[in-house]
Amino acid sequence: MQSISIIIPTYNEANGINRLISYLQKHGGDSIKEIIVSDGGSVDDTISIAAAAGAITTLSPYQGRAAQMNHGATLATGSVFYFVHADTFPPVTYASDILSAINKGYAFGRYRTKFDSNKKILLFNAWFTRFDLFICYGGDQTLFMQRSLFDQISGFNGSMRIMEDYDIVTRAKATGARYKIFSSTALISARKYDTNSWLRVQTANYEIIRMYKKGATQEAMAKRYKKLLNYR
Image (cartoon, rainbow, N blue to C red; front, side, top):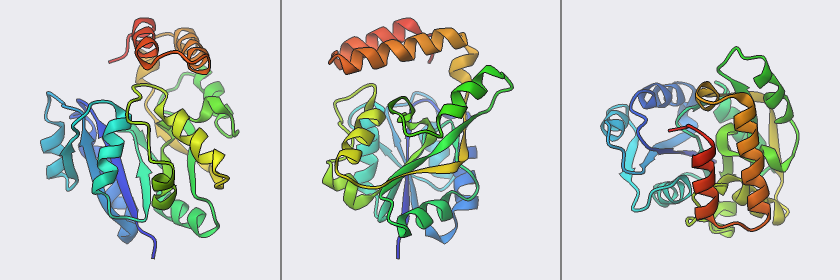
């Protein structure tokens, strides 16, 4: 029987981590093996709040989502890994969606996007996430992956500080594994757009993807992204 291990990378997410864990527990049912919070050295109460909410908590030896998610995966016992960002809420049907996809032969996949914002221009961004495009490989839409496929491709590239989600999806697709894009949506925080204009965020995303495809270093991309955006 398939079981799901949820892995959440965190850094200073004390304000929202309890709500997310409670939501995942409420709607996950018996198919959820565990919820693992892999923290990157938060200086707030993220870890203690997550533990009190019932999650397995661990301090990753390395900071950064890729390294933290890999570290969380080392503790996971489920046959399916489900990577969820701390500011994202999948549909209430997420567990049955994932298990149904696995049973139909899909090895990994994601949801479409819905932003927690009334800004109409964000509907434009969300609409494109129904397509299998490179620009839609980001981890905001959550990512499920069979443990066997994760092991086959050696997980995330732990040295990456940025674009790690695009990288793992690209490598997973290269194996020929089937990729599922659900018709339903994950609710994604628009906080990046709240502190930057829509155009500024799109410009930053475009430039980082361009740098990535040209082989820029992780340090150069992370430094440039931080300079382009006012975001945590």
